[in-house]
Image (cartoon, rainbow, N blue to C red; front, top):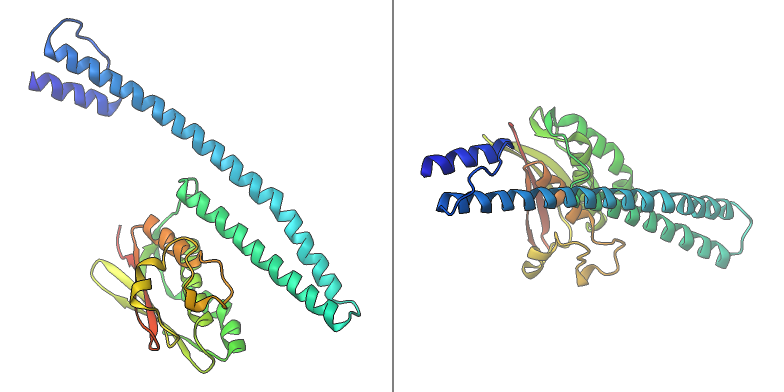
Amino acid sequence: MIRNIHTMLDAAIDGTFAEQTFDESLLASVESKLNDYLSASAVSSRNLTIEKDKIKELIADISHQTKTPIANILLYSQLLGEQDLTDESRTCVQSLQSQAEKLNFLIAALVKLSRLEAGILTLNPMETMLQPMLQDIQGQLTPKAEEKGVIFTVVPTKSKAVFDPKWTAEALANIVDNAIKYTQPGGVVTVSVKSYDLFLRIDVADTGAGIKEDELPRIFSRFYRSPSQSKQEGVGIGLYLARQILTEQGGYIKVSSSPGKGSVFSMFLPVMR
């Protein structure tokens, strides 16, 4: 009996199972139930594939249908800004451009999130040196730090880990961007790396306002924004997206912080497959 069930399970695993016993025995009943289960699983799998295809098509439509209007709004607001306008009109145009850029960022972030959560977008982790990614982040965000008067430093490293370069760079950029945003002029944001046996840790440390202890469990939630930082621009997606990207490739993220003493966001990446 046990041997027959073992054989049935092996057949189910390799996809060759077929109901063969048709009598009143317990084995026939088990075989029939296993056949029903596999049939239901196959239907569920097909339905899931169909739903994913529909979601993929919907996301593609949203991305396509919104891209051109937003690009046009940004273009026309830029052209308006080049005209001879009154101070009041110029303020309105600047506000229009700022809101259009915010909307553009929000839609792009939502599309990325939807693709990740629906399993449509696949990350491709590979063994990669960290330094090129860190240099790109430094080049990308140094102007923003300088404009705000924040000292932004990246400590060089020769370490490597297993990660998707494109998406991990996006996760790290979101964290560094947040650090700069919430650090006052004259403050410091530092990116450094530490290696362990199984993981590599990227620390983003800042001397900003810090985070209250009761808020720490919520900061990685989708759309969460601290009430104490309501005046800052943002939509509450960056940290959530960063966590999703790291989780998808076998990594994770932690934070340690104290109000008034800054924060350290730590990204952990596996060092081997």
